[in-house]
Image 1 (cartoon, rainbow, N blue to C red):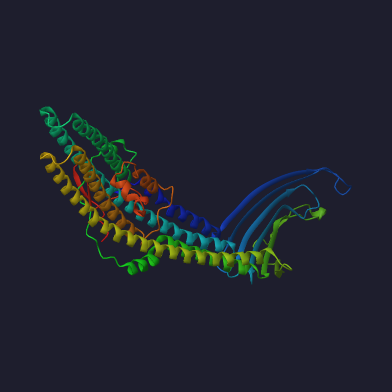
Image 2: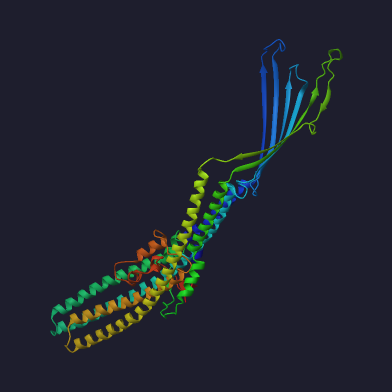
Length: 516
């Protein structure tokens, strides 16, 4: 349900698509570009000498069309163009009227050293593709964090409801003591102070029950926030029943295998390796830019001329004849050249190359640091699982002993060998022992979630929704959520998480399962 409805995850799913558009934009540089234009120019020139005694009117229409492209191989660029000009003039000096001129042009530029292996456009394309892969790792990490958050939220809800049951049991014991003490006070076998003390304990237990019930509501809201669409107001009223009990059997953890898996599969380490790939691309590019800029340039131009040729034999009038070579190759122009450009002394390209190499070394060292932290985090999570598993045994034993002590104190009170104060103290100790056991179970469940998640993704960054959810679970009421969140990266990974099943609206929905 979280993978389908979680709003933050749905937003993160757009990151790869955004990266796809960046790749497309970088690849768009290599697409051909079509250029075309039409221009009309009308000019009236006043007479300026005796050869042209009358004003000269010239009408020119120019049209051009061409295509240019940067090829994705070897840095080659080319352009092809076709131009045509139609001129109509009343000048008697023109040999053609109207005059039609055309031209075909081809240009090719080929780098021979710099920009041959890689240029800025190809560097940007390669970097954008690597960043696309990084976006995939971020989405996968977001899915892992969301999954861990749902698991944690689920077990927090289970623990919060268990805490309500424990507080309600403590309240029942306190109310029973009030009934007993009231009967004794009524018959004069106990002082009124015993009744007052018992009533005060009832008030205190009622306060703790109110706090525990509020914690359940908060835990339900955190789980709703993760698995339902919170923008739908009705979803905030969906009933959630946790149908699974927390796992308490301590599994045997293979720490070395977990570390190997983390070093190979963790999303943050994969991103660090992609950063190294980007740095290597930068090194190749900046090293290439240190080379001289040697380019081979070739140009071909073909010109055509045509129109109605004006005959100047006045005795024969002006019959005119049609001539032209618009599509001929009678007057070609070839141009081939080699250009060389190389700066003297220290230059920006050399400084950029040195910086790129340092950045690559920095990325490699950061990867080593990230791998070291990953190993430490996996080992620490394993020790947390081991510690919390042992805590379950000790807190369970403490709770059993507290129950025995309370039972003994109540029997001693019945025969006049104890006091209400000692019974109240035993009740408090039992309530605290029960809370401690619930906290140990929750801490164990969260540490299992954390141990599994840390093999696939790094810890949740501060300021994320899941981290804020964890912080909200650390209430000051002494609840299991607060006790378990101390030192638990899973609690800081999001407070609110799913187990093997959830009941929403009376329908059991399979969950994600707990890590084994």
